[in-house]
Length: 272
Image 1: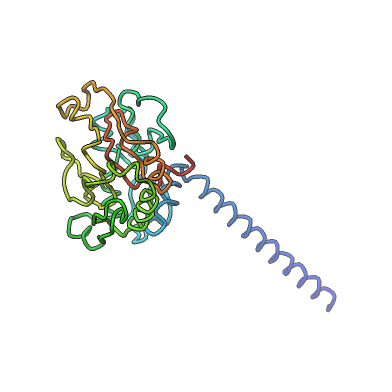
Image 2 (image 1 turned 90 degrees about the vertical axis):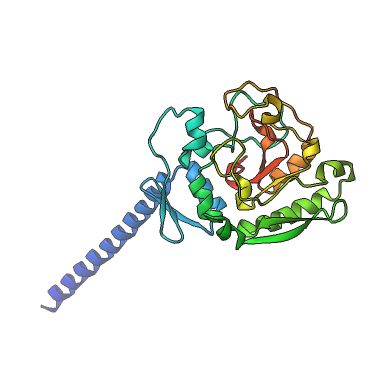
C-alpha cells in the first residue's frame, strides 16, 4: 500500500513539474510572439519615448496613462497632401532620414521627418499652449559666442540636449554668424500656409539665424506643396552633424527645404 502511495505521489509531482515547465515555455512563446508583432519602426518610438510609451498591442501604441493610438490606419497610397494632413504613426517612417552629409539635393517630395502625426506629439508635449508651457524652461544659447536666452521644453531632456549642442557649437567661432540671432524656438502657431500645428508649438524645435538660411516657400514665393523648387543651402555640414548626434533632424534634408530648422526626432535617427 505504501509503495503504491509513493508511486502515485511521484506521478503527481512529475505531472506538476511538467505542467510548470509547459507553462514557462508557453509564457516565453507568448512573450516572443509579442516582441515579434511589434513593427520595427514602432519599436523605435518605444525606445525614443520610454517615459510615455509602455507597449504595443493589436496595432496600437500603449501609453503610460493606458490610452492607445492606432499605428496603421490601413489606408494605402495616400497622396502627398494626405500624408501631411492625415498621417498615421506608421506614415511618419515612410521616408528614411539618413544621418550624415547630404550628398545631393533631395528628390522631389522626399521630406523625411516632415510627415508628422500631430496627435502623437500633442500626447508627448502637450495638447494646448497652456499644457506645453508647463514644461518650458530658459537656457543660454552658446554662452561664449552668442549668449542669447531661448525657451525650450524639458520633456525628453530636450533642454539638456540643446545645452550640449550649444556647448559643442560654442567651440567653433567660424560658425558664429549662423548661430547669432536665433530665429525661433517655442511658439504656439500653425505652419505658414497650412492648418497644421508647427513643431515649434512643442518647444522641441529651433531655427538658427534666418539671415543665412533658405526656405522653399521663399524660393517659390508660394505655399503650394506641388510647386517645383530649386534646392538652396548655406548651413555648414558640421553644424548639422552636431545636432544629429544629439537626436535632432535637419530641415535641409527635405525637398521642401527649411535649412534653419532643427527638430528633436530621435525615433528617426535610431540605427541611422
